[in-house]
Length: 121
Image (cartoon, rainbow, N blue to C red; front, side, top):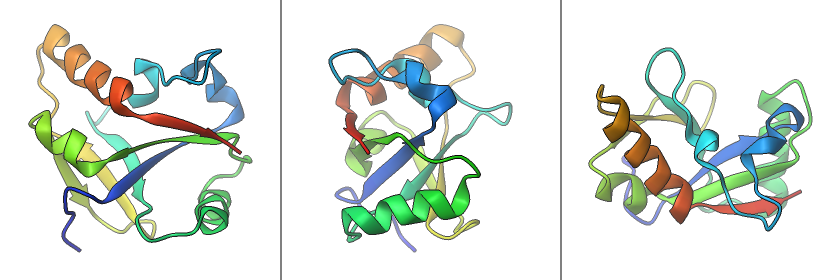
């Protein structure tokens, strides 16, 4: 699957990650923290109804999701990052290409967070 700029990417927020969301519903940079592999795990949720998105999250996480941070693929692309669609599990992709420089890495993740929206379940 080729990811296009208007595809929607979702980062599911679980109870232990509630600190990723501000009191006024903004998304914190921590929501886009990279794993030990330097990637941010997301799901491609374009063309899915909201109830299908929640069902998809429940199917792939042992704990109930409390919300989601979502953004357009264009935001990722405009930051010079890439989206690696691997479909493992279904509809899964990784945001990759984060710089090794700590400050630049943080700036990229901040840019994603600023453009992301939060949707409470």
